[in-house]
Structures are given as C-alpha cells and as structure tokens.
Amino acid sequence: MKRLLLGVMGWLACSMAHTSVVVKELSYRGDDDGPALSRTQYRNPVLAGFYPDPSAIRVGDDFYLVNSSFGYFPGLPVFHSRDLVTWTQVGNAIDRPSQIDYGRNELTRGLFAASISHHDGTFYITNTCFYCDGGNYVITAKDPAGPWSNPVWLGFEGIDPSLFFDQDGSAWLVNNGLPEGKLRYQGHRAIWIQQFDVASMKLIGPRNVIVDAGADPATHPEHIEGPHLFRNHDYYYLTAAEGGTGEQHAQMIYRSRQITGPYEAWAGNPILTQRDLPTDYTHPVTSAGHAQLIELKDGSWWAVFLATRPYRGNQYNLGRETFLLPVTWQDDWPVVLPHGERVPLVAKRPALPRDPATMPMNGPFHWSEHFHGPTLPMQWMTINAPHSPWYVTGADGLHIEPSTTPLGDYKSGQPAYLAHRLQHRKARISATFDIHRMEPNEQAGLALFQNETHFYTAALTNDGSGRSLVLSMRAGKDAPATGVVFARLALPGNTTLVSLRFELDGPRLDVFYALKADDWHPLGRGLDASLLSTASAGGFTGVTFGPYAYKPATGSGVTAAAQQAKD
Image 1 (spheres, helix red, strand yellow):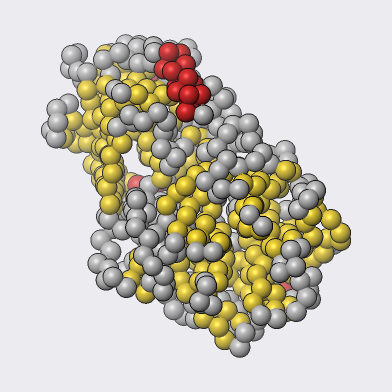
Image 2 (cartoon, rainbow, N blue to C red):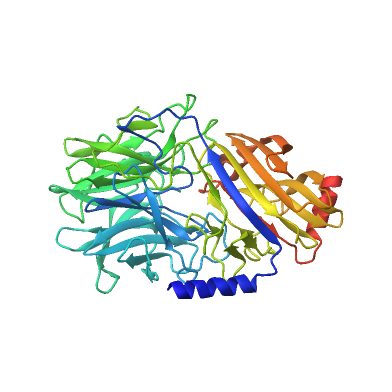
C-alpha cells in the first residue's frame, strides 16, 4: 500500500509540475474567550464548527461518532474518544470518489444525517445522499478508521435512516418519511420502522409507521426526523427531533414494550430544547436537538446533540456544532435538559479516564500546515469529489491547478478550493502564496466560504494590468459567480511571496496582506461577516476557509473583474 501511495503521488507530482499556484503555509488561530476549565470540567461544544447531526455509540471502552458533511468530500468524518469529551478524527467514511457520485448539486445537498452502529465485530453507517440516484444506503467496516465499503442502496423513501441491533441480534431500521395517506400540513412527516437482514443487507418484512407527525399531533409538529432506537431494561425507546433544525428544534422521546410499537410519547416532552429561551444574553446557545443517547459501562447515560452559538440574534457562521450533556432519568423517561435550562458551555466531565488530545477540537488553539506530507490531512475537503488531480502536496508546499469553474458555480465543474472548517467566532487565518510562476489571467487566494452564493475571497491576480490584490464578495445568487470586486491594490512587479490574512470577530471581518514577514497592511476593514451566516445565506452548512485557484476558460474573467474594481 505504501509503495502504491508513493507511486500515485509521484505520478501526481509529475502530471502537475506545471502548476503555477503554490501555498507555502496556512495557519489558524481561534479563541472565543470562554472560561478556563478545571480538571473536572469540559467545554461545549465538544466538536466546534461545522460538525452537525452527531451520531455516537459505545463499543467496549471506546466511543465512535460520525457527522453530516453534505456536499463536501471526503464525507462523513468519523471520530474516536475514550472519555466522550476529547475526540480525534480517525477517518472519513466516504473517502473514495467511486463510493458515491454526489452529482453537480448545491453544497447543501449530498450526505445528510448519518447514523453509526456496531454488531458482532462490524461497524455500520446508514445515511441519505440527498439528490443522489440511490437515496438511502448502508456501508460497513471492520475498523471505523476505514476503509468503509461501497454503499448498499436500500431503496426506500425518506431520509435519516438509523440502524438498531436488538439483544437477540435482530436489526431494525427507523427513518423519517412521508406519512401514510395525505399530508395534513406542509411539515407533516412520520417515523417508519422495518426489519433489516444483515446477511442479505436488505430490508425485510412489513414496513410500518410508529410515530405520525410528532409528540403532540394536534399542534402540527414540523419535520419529525433524526430517529434513533435504543433499549433500557424492559422498554424500547425512540428519540427523534422535531421543529426543524433551526430555533424551534426540540428533542422528543417515546417508548414501547414492543420494538414495533405502539409507542407512547412522554407527557414531559421535549427532553431537550432551547426554543423557549431568549437569545439576548452572553454566549447564547440555540437550535438544540438531533440527539443520540449513549449508555456508559457504569449505567450512566449521556447525549450528543447539535446546537448553534449565535453572535447576534440567531446569526451564526460556524454552522451546527456537536454538544454533550449527561442524561437523567425520571420515572423511566430520559431527560437531557430540564425545561427552561440553558445548554451550559462548561459542565462536569464524565467519570471516565481522560483521553489525551492529539488536536484540540474546541477552546482556544492554533495550528499551522505546510503541506509537506504525502497527502492532505483528513480534515481538508473539496466541494464534491475530484475525479482528476488538481492539487498535490510536496516539499515546497501545496500546488493547486487553477480550475475554470469559479467558487460560485456548481453546475459546470469543480472549483479548485481546499476547505477546512471554521471553528471559532473569533479567528485569524493566514496563508502565504508563492506567485512567481503565476500565468496570465490566473487568480489565487484565500476564501471564506458559506456556500456558492455567499463568500469572501482575498486573491492575487495576474491580468492585463499586472499583478494585483483583489478583495471580492458574493452575497446572492444574482451576483457574478466570481464575486463582486470592491477593493484592488497593485503589487510591485518583483513580488514573489504574498501573505493574506482574515480576522473574524462574530459579524466583523478585517482583511490584511503582507509582502514581507509580519509586515501587515489592511486590504479591507469592518466588512460584514454576517452575510456568511446561515440566516443570510440559508442552507445547513457552516463556514469553511482555505486556498483556491481560478482561471477563466476565455481568459477574460479576471480582467473584467479588475476593470469592475477600477470603475
């Protein structure tokens, strides 16, 4: 395998020797000014940034967790922990272009809520590829780090499949789907159950609705989804979210003595929500829900769930993040958070041995990447899967072949953009580019990217006017796919190295450049970062950042942008 990898990397290096965009270094520093922790405390979220829809399980002394990734590749990041607090990414379940073809869809399509389970030495992930031909599928692995199998498509209507193994070894799949009969209102959905045959990897037997509409159907609950089954003593429990994934998000609980029902809703629902609380306080948390409950060896229970950390009203750039809280039991009903209580940003750690962190996933931290390894670290992503090589790492940094597809276009091809999740509201992102080989009409730089219609770029261009720095943004689908240029600065003709820096503080963005080490100058100050929020941009993702390179097929796009800036 090592010999094959080196051979492939050698071929990539040779095939891309002509690339003209080189990223020498990229660094990240973030600190949201949270409180200091004692030895007995942990910080929420446990996975900061765009890590939504968490699903987690315990296997012996180990915990494994998977998140949604939508249109990014590789997809479905898989994490490991021994203490539920410190999580280390061990792989991506979808890491080969041959596994799934996302198609040319918007970033908010792709891989929706995944669910991880384990039985008899095999790990299972069930998932929905939204707008893919197959829809719902299951993949398997002996090692959660991978490799994971190619998908087995299951062929049923709906989303959010979750696989549960009962004590007798039987397997059952629950999912969100359309109700039986007519929709009573727009958000009317149901939870379905059907048996799953592990040997044939197919659904078998009758398919039945076990919850119609939600915990209180008379109130017309919206979009019941993200179901998970678990067992505790004599009851089967079904937990599912409703209210949508925004501010009205809430987690409900149901139980039955038979796995196929009937299921009764708890009179004390919801077991987790922040929808009734104001957001006009310091460090608010909103949108809590989509939970999965985990039993520890000592019989205690914990829940992972998604929530958001807005900075103004319900504006947030980081997307939906992974939180952790203990579960208490009331009359054989689990409760994650009593009504009216706020999700704490600091809480008491589980009674588990501490797991040393290889790379912090929350709190203040910083890192630098020089791209010297044989491959990119597993945290880096592209928009959809690359089907031909356009980047390679090496001794002198990251080489990127410019794409003829701009960041705002998802239909004509793949942008040459390497993305990393933003994990702090207050962050500093810097990158250094070697531009001495830039060809005419090329553009390369840093992007802050929410989706195809909402992003900022700070770029180096080489057009008819010479080499320049260009600051652009896109804030709507009617804007140019390359963004609208609103600042331009000519570079000296002998410039070879340029550093660019984004500084974020909630809704504020400042942009700087440097032609010499640590000699920073402003390129744009006081820019509106809230246009990157989900409230402005829509969708389900969080902001990513990273280097990109673009060269219009006709050679006219960058020149036109430069002329726009002059005008």
